[in-house]
Image (cartoon, rainbow, N blue to C red; front, side, top):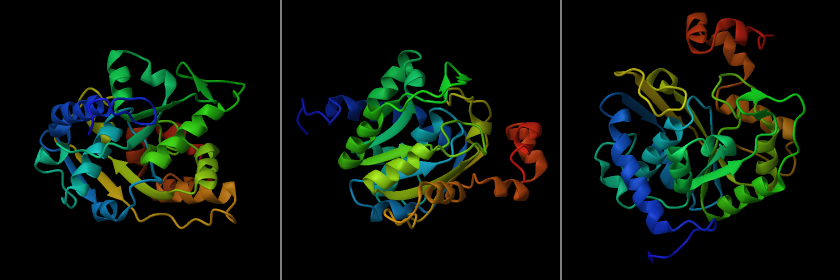
Length: 269
């Protein structure tokens, strides 16, 4: 790798590689040590092509979810199955991993700005601003969609299609439009335990000895030409286990602990 080689967004790969290494060393014990990250399905990672892969996941914290994915993906590519044991896998990380994040989140302080250099594709949320829902949705910035397309062409992209860390919120249709337009391989991931382990930002540890689960599912079967946006949205909801029907099989006390039962009852039908 040349010292001055850049990715399509102008980031120096040499700098990005060292940032990934440093953050991996600083965060490894948060998933293997202080807590126990249980991984399933990591053998799928090695079967994927080098580009045009879209990972979709439920969302529990701003940053801890993404950091865990960097650990799991790189460990899997280095031959570790369902394990992040032995941090040596991060010495030669996969450099073309990106993640979609809200622009306002990645500008909120020095640390988020540094994390943004690791691979953030920042987007303007049309339905939310400054931590509050907006009454009039803003127009989608076409540059945001184009940047996601550029990242898919260069490598792998992680996105959280609900656009929020709250459980059982609707999947945003923009993700389905991206899938229809760029036709990526779509790999679902379901995580749990992160909300109990970390604060909302995922920077501060809240509890230790929490069982964190990380399940990688086989790629979705999608007919890019015939499936409608609504059909793709529904497939995503089921794949990341955020469809409202899942409320019926989750113990009430678990729902109440995570989000507040009254907030979620409005989704029952």
